[in-house]
Image (cartoon, rainbow, N blue to C red; front, side):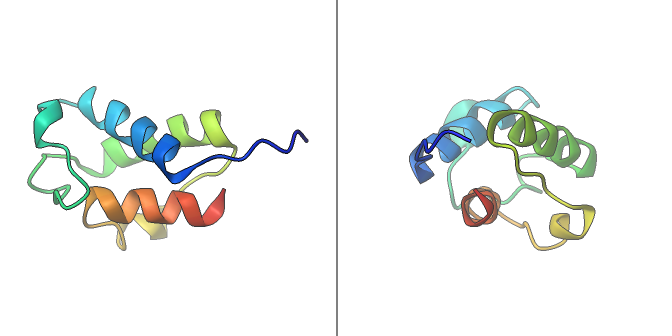
Length: 82
């Protein structure tokens, strides 16, 4: 496997872009934004998981969804697995 370093900023960018496709306004997507406030549901999280898995080779488990309350939580969790 190539030793490409994936930065937290790259992960954040991917997550922000993916979430924007689910409906919220891009300016509303911040690290502190609650997923519930953005109307991001479990189906959206499943889709985000697929995007992240395709991009970085790591997935989110269904049990992870309970821990992810904010956009920052999602970025942190993905970054910890990459």
